[in-house]
Length: 431
Ligand SMILES: NC(=O)c1ccc[n+]([C@@H]2O[C@H](COP(=O)([O-])OP(=O)(O)OC[C@H]3O[C@@H](n4cnc5c(N)ncnc54)[C@H](O)[C@@H]3O)[C@@H](O)[C@H]2O)c1
Image (tube, rainbow, N blue to C red; front, top):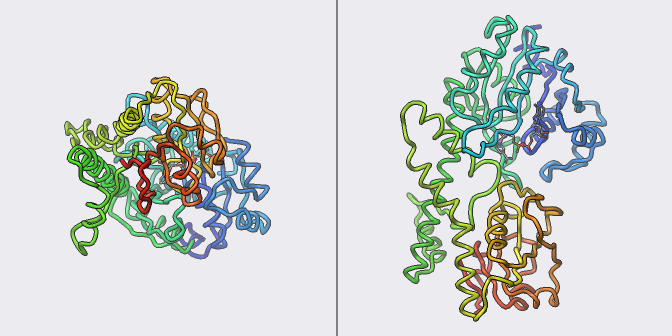
């Protein structure tokens, strides 16, 4: 039986390298569709937890994970030699930025070095990590062919961007259409067959470069529009206009307008990072991606703007930041999730620290902050605790926070997400 027949018959053995926010839901989706799947991760704790059916990703319920592991459809390992036995390999490892804002694809390269050791005929490799256009053909293909096997006749290679939105219950790994671009048409066909066999909805495109660019366009679109609305928010503040009301009213137009909302800065593993993958690659072709750079500048300045506004508001109450007790409410990068990667809360805390503020934080989803933040204390929301605060800054507006308690007990509440839109109290300041 050839690879394509095996995939279509659901007889292929799948593997997913990198069992994080992207890889674990994908591996579980494959196994829920009845496909035998192996997950590989270099973090031993994740491997153990997957095998124990104990999920560490909120979007993957432990009961689901436990069921597919118990039924023998999913197992995890740190041993790459299992790749000898698998037919397909999906790669979902991190793609961060270096301090210089250059792409860091070292995790992809490390995974490829392992794959190359066990690469065999009739194997399909699909990269799902976000990366710059050309990675699949220019970096992955030569590395894989180093062992002597040839693309097309021996193995197949494609790119399919992961578009998952953590915490989104309506659109999940299963029902978000899956853009797929192979290095050759046969590669695309096989990758399409794989996603179809898992009950997903593949959208084929003509090359891996197009598929790589699709993801970057999507995230650049968000970054630029958020940058635009952040600038409008700063402008409206200077002009004494309520930006939130402007956006809500503009959003009543049934066509030609899509609302984006200002906020305290970008966060997460995608929007603050991915556009720079594109601008970096564009620069190599002699092209300056100006929108990307400008939006990046405006968005990364927002934590500073928040701190300035808090400083001004304290000043109105004859207080200064130095020595003030400031509570950060919501530290994850968006509402109702536990992920704090790249959260603007970190920059806001750093800037407040620099001004001598005493900082406290509260987040019902997060148990621990990154160590780099230094001295900050976790605080439970009680009237007594809140009364001691000089200001509470809502950085992320989780739906399970008691905002009545906050507004009724804090001297000053700075709302950077407009979650207090229905409150009229005078101690509220909006971004
Ligand atoms: N998190 C999101 O919402 C999201 C959405 C769309 C796309 N993406 C993209 O998907 C990719 C993965 O992101 P993520 O959020 O799942 O990251 P993550 O950090 O949650 O997970 C990555 C996993 O890969 C493992 N890993 C690292 N190097 C490895 C290696 N050489 N071999 C095996 N395992 C290795 C890590 O231990 C970790 O468990 C990134 O390119 C990201 O930009 C993320």
